[in-house]
Amino acid sequence: MSTLQLRRRESKGVPSGWPDSVHPVLQQVYAARGVLTPAEVEHRLARLLSPQLLGGMVQAVDLLVEAVRDDWSILIAGDYDCDGATGTAVAVRGLRLLGAKRVSYAIPNRFVHGYGLSPALVASLQPTPQLIITVDNGVASVAGVAAAKARGIRVIITDHHLPGEQLPACDAMVNPNLLGDPFPSKMLAGVGVMFYLLLALRARMYPSDLPDRESQEAAIQDRTTQKSVRPDLSGLLDLVALGTVADLVPLDFNNRVLVEAGLQRIRSGRACAGIAALVESGKRSMAALCSSDLGFTVGPRLNAAGRLEDMRLGVECLLTDDVTQARRYAEQLGAINLERRDLQASMVAEAELMVVGMTDIDAIGVALYEPSWHAGIVGLVASKLKDRLHRPVIAFAPASEDDTDNLRGSARSIAGFHIRDALAAIDARLPGLIERFGGHAMAAGLSLKTCDYPRFAAAFDAIARELIDAERLQAVLYTDGQLPPGAASLALARQLRHAGPWGQAFPEPLFDNLFECASWKVMGERHLRLQLRDPRDGSVHDAVMFNAYHGQPPPPQLRAAYELTINDWQGRETPRLLLRHIEPA
Image 1 (cartoon, one colour):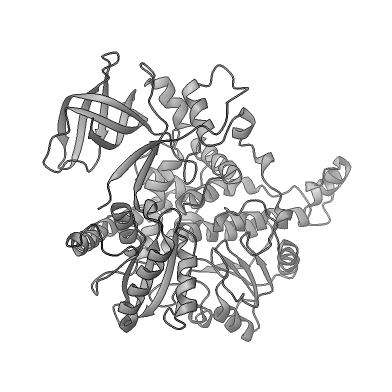
Image 2: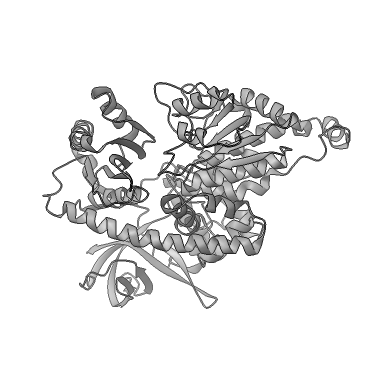
């Protein structure tokens, strides 16, 4: 197992123009992330990139205008993760707001239809829709689009995944990651791409979006056309925020605008019934909700349905406006999530046993397979093992209980090793070995024959050895340096909590200091609660560390990497250190 090295982030410039109300520590945190002025954290919706910058938008909107005008039957083809579920809900709600009367959706069952717009999913569609719009999938659905076209169905693809060598022959495609696409941000999640398509459709249908005030007023007053008061799409932003955070796309400025707008809706009590019920089920405060709550509490409840059951349950939760029904859905999703956690713990334990006998990991690219594993959980296993080993990991399971001749794999990577490109390289060298693959730099999915697993495992290790430098195999935890004496206050904790939104590529502030362990005790079976003394001024800080107790006491003198958080106990807020790593001083 790789040892962990603490390194401090370097400032990317000198902060300037900040008001005195912004703590100097927060200014330095921003500077380490390349944010140097207040304007760079003004997450106003008016600063969103224009939908017109996305390639393929004109063709997609032309087709949608015709579909709404002529009352076509429209089917949204979603995906079985949180991004796909929220994107499906955004598409259904948004198109109905914009006048589409016959909108339905289909989510593939991973064990029956496979991934995305597959021929199997197309064959299952009854009655036949006139238009299919994919969400968070489709760029690799060459066969699925061909099957749809053979049935006379028009297809619009909205996706954010990287394209392969061949694109499907669809009627329109909106994807910021297509080669040559002019959209400045390549980081949109699938739900974000769908939201942008709705913005562009509204702009076409309701020219009150035009800057000329007389044109706006004429459009609003013209009751003889559909152009009355523009539909308000901001009500979809809670869904956009959830899908964006849960999909772990980098939170560049544009994504932070979307996420912050969604969080503001939730905090102000304007979330849709489903998200409100999921937040309530996760015992989180609506008024104080932050992006990490979406990622670690709300998102997993939705994802569990797609992993173990049918994501239609999750989509229905996000579509209902009935508070009571939403709570029933949230309760079911919570129960499925508990089952997912138990299954994940068992599979991770088995995976860890597989690597115990290895001497500092013989393989650089690690492939794991167990016939009893569940295909819906292997991505979580790969993620956990990747964190432990600090190597790219692909975990495999049988495609289904009835199909043990085929495997489905889920890959997670480390910085500097583009996992989808690595799979593409294997595919080029060994044609036919991988039956299907797709994904991003840090995560991907693939399928292959069970009999081909040994050959694939060797090929994956070989490409990893070829492309990963030795220094990349050292796990590094980056911190924002020491907190000055007396800085660990409730006031700073509050500023840090809401200064984000924090997330992928815009990480939560993490500090490191030397402490003396004044006292400690075990909470539950594996958690630690500590009192840490700062030797510089003698101040004592309450601290917790989860899943950290393995029978040994913490060091009496230690270096800790930690987040400064808020402990809300019985309505009383106090600052608390959430420890992420400790080592002897």
